Amino acid sequence: MFSHAIVRTPGRNFAQGLTTADLGEPDYYTAILQHRAYCKALEACGLQLTVLDPDPDHPDSVFVEDTAVLAGSRAVLTRPGAPSRAGEVDTIAGTLAAFFEDVCRIEAPGTLDGGDICEADGHYFIGISARTNRAGAEQLAGFLKAKGFTASFIEVTGIPGILHLKSGISYLGDGHLAAVQPFAGLPDFQPFNLVRVPEEESYAANSIRVNDTVLMPWGYPKMQAALEALGLPVIALPMDEFEKMDGGLSCLSLRF
Ligand code: CIR
Image (cartoon, rainbow, N blue to C red; front, side, top):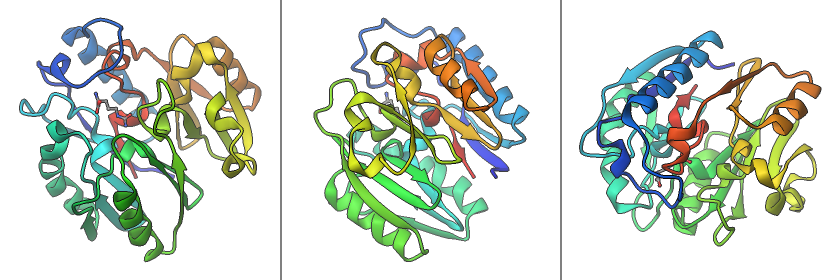
């Protein structure tokens, strides 16, 4: 069960962040409204929020998930793979130190984005991507092992449309794992009850289980029906402005 989440309000220069999506420029005001709805949904799931102020020096800093990996009493500060995002870690470190007694950090030459980490019942899948290199993945696996968690690596590099591992998979609890087609066949994921995300709904692969509820992006009826058929309560949220910046539901919060 989660009791807290850390989020950061989008800054006015949010549209100046990194993106590969060809979906047009996000609208700041709509992003604020969508972010507010996201925060309300987390609160409806029973979480207490720590809302950080916008960080004008880092337009991508609304995507707080990439700055840390949380594992029990340990917070691992990342070393983001995109140089423009490196400074985001220092601006959140103090907040994490207030909640976690044990804070450690990925060091050079390792790079790692939190979006590449998918935790499933104490096992951590670590994506090796354009943002997370093997040195970063190995450091994280060591930090996790020291706390009794296991880890394995999943190759993400070169899969079209997939920035991070969690752009293509989500662990939804109770053994359910949503995956887009390129991941669904991997032996690593066969022990799970696979929810196959149709290609035209691939953005919905980034959904999150928050206590009893699944938060998913709005506008993906097949995925929503599949989750409801599993008996999972669903809240669907408009996410278009974040999608324009390659961001999904998981990236907007650190949950613990
Ligand atoms: C970036 O390219 O880093 C941001 N525009 C989007 C990051 C999304 N983060 C995530 O999926 N965890």
